Amino acid sequence: MGRIYTRTGDAGETALRGGRRVPKDHPRVEACGALDELNSTLGAARAFLQDAELGTVLERVQRDLFVLGAEVSAPDQAGPRVDAAQVLALEKEIDRLEAELPPLSAFILPGGHPAGGLLHLARAVCRRAERRMVALARRELLNPEVVRYLNRLSDLLFVLARTVNRRAGVDETLWPGKG
Image (cartoon, rainbow, N blue to C red; front, side):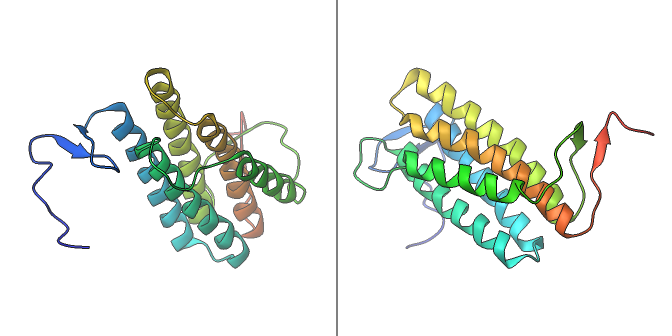
């Protein structure tokens, strides 16, 4: 890789994978940016995480998000694609982790252990990325598995936040609750 700055985006355009130039506010760039925000939020959560098993889960998701980003950036280019097997893997992880959690009886307020709080934030960022993908899919080509993956990922992030808090001994704050 060369220098970090290229000056090619100074006029408000950027290049997608494959070289196509588009405005920086193009829906495809917005969608890729949302994935980048999500991946960065997961990285911050991993930095606070003291549970190696859950760290491995998050790293696998971060690697998947790079695949999603490459695919969204240039759906007509050859390369790895997100598929139904990856969505199924998220579902299996949700089921496995949810088995150790008490059932929900009310909404919970996001927060808790620093890693748990960041995973709640990541869930919200994931939902935004999903909305960006839905908007993009209305205008341009997009693999439907991308939206399915993000939909399931937000569920996994919620379960991961609860798992982190439970394993750290942090009680969930229910809403409505006393206070």
